[in-house]
Image 1 (tube, rainbow, N blue to C red):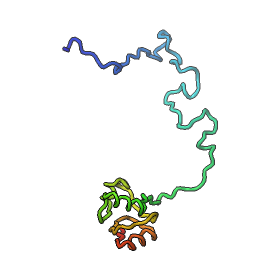
Image 2 (cartoon, rainbow, N blue to C red):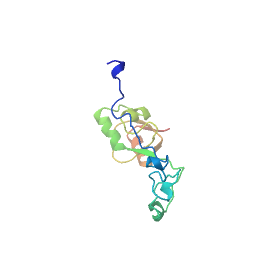
Image 3 (tube, helix red, strand yellow):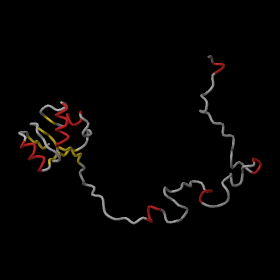
Image 4 (cartoon, rainbow, N blue to C red):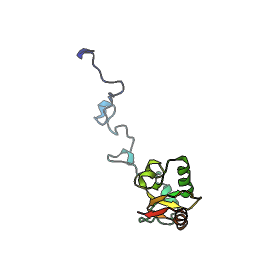
Amino acid sequence: MDLSNLKPAAGSVKNNSKRVGRGQGSGKGGTATRGHKGAKSRSGYSRKIGFEGGQMPLQRRVPKFGFKNINRKEYQGINLDTLQKLVDEGKIKDTVDLDVILATRLARKNDLVKILGRGELKAKLKVSAHKFTATAKAAIEAAGGEAVTL
């Protein structure tokens, strides 16, 4: 390869030879291939998202109800039987904190963690989480462990 046979990659250069709106002699003058009148023929036209040609759009036809609480906190729930299973598999020794939860992929980095009371916990664990249900806290302490709220 040398300078005499360089060429751009296939498909990277488009030769659009249609020059519109340059007078009647070009064959593409006048309406410049946009047809006659209407919003689409005007400069600056961009169709609104969800526009249905003037028909009442779906997002306005469908009834709305309820509300979204902007202050809601979402917690990633982890049940006691999940913790017990990890103890049985040898993935958890004696403490369960956010690092262990991340390593076992039970929650993501920015998740708030809540320990839930489903299942049975036999192992003595020191569990650190953002929240505990009453049954989960009782079960952890009954097994001789400790529930630490972050």
